[in-house]
Amino acid sequence: HCSPVGGHFRVNEMLNNIRKRFFWSTCKQDVERFCRKCDVCFSRDGPHRLAKGELQIFNVGFPFERIGIDIVGPLPVSANGNRFILVVVDYFSRWPEAIPLPNHRAVTIATALVNNVITRFGVPSEIHSDQGRDFEAEIFGSVMKHLGIHKTRMTPLHPQSNGLVERLNRSLINYTSKFVGKNHRDWDCWIPSFLMAYRSSTNQTTEFSPSMILFGREMRVPLDLVQGNPVPNETFQDADYVDQLHSQMINVHDQVRNKCNLKSEKMKSKFDLKSHMGYFNPGQKVWLFSPKSVKGKCPKLQSCWEKTYVVHSKLSDVVSRIQKFPRGKFKVVHVDRFWPMET
Image (cartoon, rainbow, N blue to C red; front, side, top):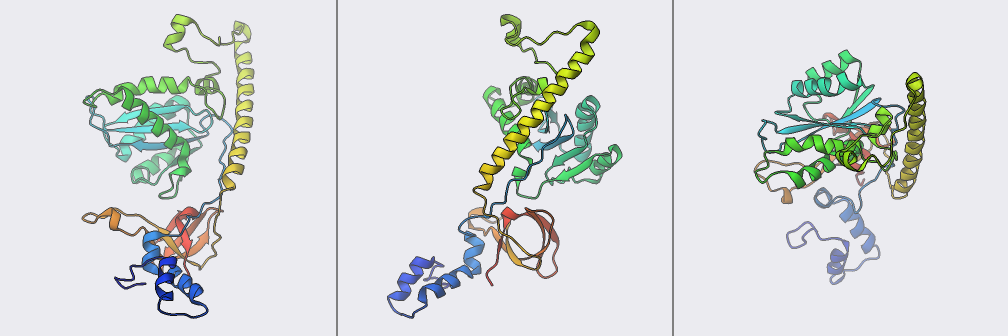
C-alpha cells in the first residue's frame, strides 16, 4: 500500500491485488483497517464525508442589537483612491452599509464604523466578524471596549458563521460587476445605488424591506416619482403622528421577530436532517482540516488534513478548543473541521 507501486490506492484496488496472490479469512477487514490508519492517505484525502454540525440559531429582538462586519477586497484602486469595502449588516432589519476604504488598517475601519454606522444608528450590543488581524487589533478592541460593545468572532475557515454578511458581499460584488466601467476604476461610484436597491427590496426572511423595519415606511425610489408609489405609506394625523408611528413600528417588529423565528426553525429542521456531527470527548485525538497556501509550493500537491490534535474542551455543541499534540497552541474550531483519528 505505501510503496510507489502500491500507490496508496484505496481498499478495493488493494484487495484485488492481494487476493491475486494471498488469502486469509480476515483479509478484507485487515485491509480496511490498514487504509483507515494510513496517515498519508488521510492527510491528503480526508474522510469520505465531512462532519456537519447542527445549525445554530442566533435571532435578535430589535434593530442594531447585533451587526455583522467584513472587509471586501483588495479591489482595483478606484479613481477616488479606494481599494477595500467595509460591509456592515444589521441582523434584525437586514439594513446594509458599504463604506469604501483606501486601506484596511484597524484605525481606518474603526473610524469608518463609528462615523458611518454608530453615530447614525446608535451603539450596537454586539459586533460579529471574522478573525482578520484588523478586527483583532488592539486599537479596534479598545474602541469596542470603550463603547461597551461585545465583540464576537467566527471560527477560522467557517464563513457560514457570518452568513448574512457573506450573502451581502456576494450581492454587492455581483451588482457592481454588472455596472462597473471597463477600467474597473469606478466601482465605488456604484455602491450608493446598490445600497438604495437593497434597502428598498423586500427581504425573503422578514418579508419587509430594511427601510420599512428601520423607519416604519417604504423608501421612495426614482421609479415612484414617475409612476407613483405602488404601496402608499400610511398617513398619520399630525397630532397623533408619533403615537401612531410607534404603534406601527411595534407591529412591524413583532411580525419580523415571529417570521424570523419561524423561518429559522424551519431552516434548522431541514438543515439538521443532513447533519452527521461527531461527538468528541476531551483527550480524544483528532485530525484538523487546515488548508494552507505556502509560498513556493503547489496548492494542488499539498495535504489539507493535519495531525495530531487533542480535544481540550467543548465550548458549545459545535465548537471545541483543541491543542496540537503534545504541547502546541490552542485553537478554537468548528466541529466541521476535525475528524477522529483511528486508534
